[in-house]
Image (cartoon, helix red, strand yellow):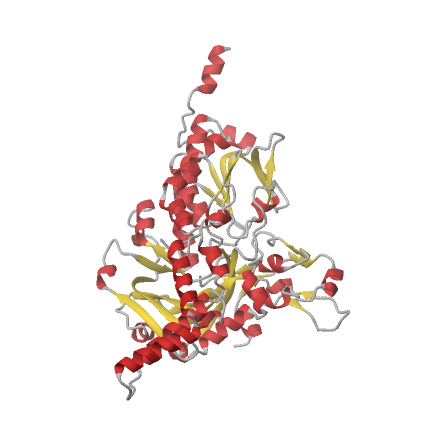
Length: 94
Length: 455
């Protein structure tokens, strides 16, 4: 099953365009060789088109709020907080 | 003057009926708990039952909305805190079967224990859906008199000039400051509150494990048939080796009433090193010939991911601060597969300490350290201490789960296979095979290292 199909099964209460995950400074990302954020995120929030000067796009709407990204960033460059009350992911099945 | 001083020193009698005027004027609570999980809600229940004015603040829309991952409830632990809980809490299945599978790409070496003795009260374990468990605990807390506020994210802990925690701020437009004598942080594995208040260091990617789960719906009768279970009974299967693709980590299958959960995960640092997506692990497990068989006809209904603190004893931050205690996952109180029960007990102990502090009107670290004293005396810290080296051992032997599953499966294969050679020669051949996979001295040293850690 493709990841995108799985993400479509998760319920999200979308917030009013206030990202709770963001990249602080894209300059560090161009220096970063590993880019762990691209692979570690269970829902693939961080996307990059593999072009040298392209920024990493953060699709925070599909974040499940695990917070793993901020632990793997070598430059401590990922800003992460929990979304406003009631917003974000809603798990129903345990 | 003396009379006034005596009045102050007199133990504060706490009555169930609160002085409404005092409360509305100050909008101050006895205890504020950040996070409505097993730890926070257990603390809230016991504090409210003892007559304290408790406010629980939860960022989810309802209890358990932010939590996922196959869960089991340890009956004896829960029964001691909430007698006969199985009559109130909606449990999925009574766990009567505990299995471990050591896996390679094509083989499974399993150990299985099944007993109807585990199906009678007071039971051993239950599989539960987190939302049901959390909702039940929230109802208990509310019925006892605690106030639970949903859809509010605690953003900050407030401290006075002397460093005493005095309240929290929440992310709402009006009335976003709540004050209390005692703050309990029960905000889970990624405790941003403790970190951003400077009470705990940032957790590391080596000490945190990332788990992903997939819930697959299957009819109840099909689950019972495929897993060889009696009606209403369930199994938890621990999967080791193949599922984590060469790294140390675990996967598991939890059976619910009409669905099963497959969980897989390992240290966040391992994921970073491996460079694959956690979902790839799940998909890989699902393709294993002996797992695939179990899932035929199942429909995936939910996917999710969560962090679990697995740093063990050495990763526990200071749990008591002036006017503040840290409980449950936020305090890294997880030992192997035991997490929910440790969280509940830590909530219970924190409630005891908070009550004693409230009675004495003393919210200092010294007074609240009754919490850590109770923890130290309990099985929680004793077991965590006993397994303190486990996290380091996993780092020292990064190949352990994979290699030893392979060796075990290879040995089992050779033992099962019937050759035309004499038995003595077969034993010699198996020994040579094992030796070729891991030198004998290295094997002996790994066994010795593990023996020292797992006592």
